[in-house]
Image (cartoon, rainbow, N blue to C red; front, side):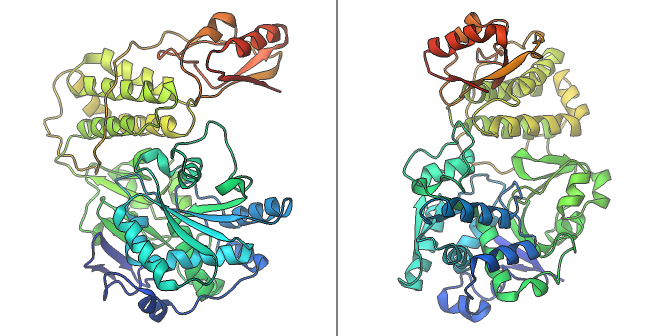
Length: 503
């Protein structure tokens, strides 16, 4: 059933192919080739767009899996409350080296992605479509495709953003295409309310728009003819960091590996570097579906599937990735640009035989960065280290105690340049318990502004404690009524203006 297509990156599909149709015959589908394979694009009213997305249960393919119909509805409602203007942004800034699926679409079938974005923009009445990318070859492919389409319809342009892991976060994408640094915002801002140019913006992943373009041509019932009743259609996976595969939902994970000539080895990391390791003895029941992944505490995320072979050291591979993730911080909050390099250093100490103290330090830093920071990067990195500790406990213990596992680190997990290091600090002491039963207000830390002065903890020691990196231990603190005056003083005295009080 499966076939490998001789393009770069190598593409494979399990019949029936949809997104990858025609790529066994040509490297890139130009406008004529695209229309020959896929046909003309229909026009949908806003209600038809929402109905189609609901009927096929279209979810975002960038990681979170948020229902696309709800995004469209939110943009429509927000635009309706204002002057009706809105925008569409395609997130093609694939910053994780284990993911190539969006790059494959934009290099080989750019018109399919543009079709989906234009379809949504036309339905919403949006004048502008912006596609965020970071690779020069992807920009070249898209620019050529835009030129092939001519001037009709919404304006479509390509925006080159920073090539960083965190640049793919929603707020960072909007910042990047707006000309600002492509880093996450300190506060959660819904792009459906305020995105490109302050307009309500439909922001979704490259594959999401490509799937929309396919579904609009096929109709909901034919689209649902493959996959699962609860998860219809197909999805794209990046397997082993070099194969891009299109597969219906419900296919066994082991079959996907088999088609790419791979084995589970010591385990398979699903969901990328913020994902989870699945061990070989559990893979027999794992299928490519959200429900199956959730049963094993995992998720497909951006579709990365990374088996680790038997002949490489899992501790060394974890250390490499942790150091790379530490180098990908946005450098805007202490728990991230101080805590993550320190965590990577601690893993390096374990790898080099640092003893039980080194293992304790790793666990201390994992706890210290959780639920802190301006985006999900600290949590995701801590999760990656935690799942490695859970999957390979014997190897971590053997390395910590000096014996090692006897295998070299081959570097099989794909990385790009730019990993950095940071200082190794002492593990934290016991956390004090705070009685917040009488708290009626909250003291909020803005991680993008906090500089670790520590003055807030001096003024409000009953509420705020500092972590091992010198920054507040968490982002939100309940303020008891009797301490409100001190909290207000802490807000006013903060040199970085990083505190605020909210009810």
